[in-house]
Length: 547
Image (cartoon, rainbow, N blue to C red):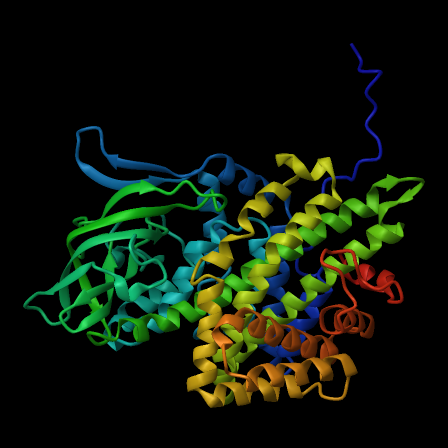
């Protein structure tokens, strides 16, 4: 019987088959800006690979993979049918397809290619909008390279496999694979971010650089990876080690997966508690220098936290704007309603500021100069603090733009909301980032000089930005009780950095709205409270999918 009483109308069409890269003006303009000095062949190659990846990310196929990978989370298999310990994690085929596409697109290959960090960060931004959970092993694999370079022999062995554009699932000797993935296991139950409280012990063998580890790890990222960077207490102090899952002779290393974490979000990805009991490991760097050795990996994963949060923000904004374009209420399209326009414009400002900052950090990695390294020392933890903190309220507001339609799983917004807090927690929570900024301010004056030089490039362009910079100077000059004020100081540092970037590179309407609200104080405590004197229609129009 025909459903004559159920006519569907006034619903937004599915957002599918769209250009995730080419449709994002802030992203494409930023990539072009930092590619300006690249060779013509490199520019063309980057445009082509990002365009292809953007089409794949917006496809029905990628959306199906994302849904299936999250509806069918990983399952731990501790033993085989005969009772042998195997410690394997089974993933849905959709997970492997997402991961294979990411690796094939070069998202673990940044350290040796021209403009490698820019193209890789933009690609990670694009592909994370398809599904964010599988980005964990992608990020860890990419970030393992600088840590392994502390040992040239290990780097020569592993780096070609880490940066290969080939994904091969399953546990086998690394020498038998065309590409490998890496995870990380640092934190323990008693210490968390305080890794110096770790108790996992490392006993040296006769062979140079070989050890046996005993202990536990409270969080192990991506337990089906081929290798892991691990911190343990050696006789000389906290030390970094490489732990392979499979030894060169094909036997399994002692690597007991006790359970998988049941997490708020990131459900497609596996995080595990693991035990080491006579686990073979190879030392990376010197004994007692574990934190210094692994810090390169941590810095790279922190940048991925910024990039991943910016990607979630952009995808949430895209969904909200798409809905508002096609949904009518009270006699007009939602996007033309003044209050909804204010909300969307506010979300668009947050997203574009995060995107601009992400690309600036990636470009600094590519430049590799002493000045840019000093800039990153402050800018990365500051950005990690602020951008990841802004992600959750922004995604929640975008979900509300869809009303009840956004609250149901089929919209995809609940998955974004569940994912949104993870980057603020992983690789050091907000307090850890803030204290890291203070440490750099106190110990590395060249970092502050580089940061001030960067924001000074916009001096005189906007009076509200200039005033905010002066207030920041006052904050930095008053060291008494600064630890208790650290979050406020870091927030202001990041906002003036974002303001400087937008004043220099964004359209005037975007920069004006950002400076008026975030720096000038003409803003409420919730999104959608921008001053009505701004050109909000232009801001929203820029956030629409281009093309």
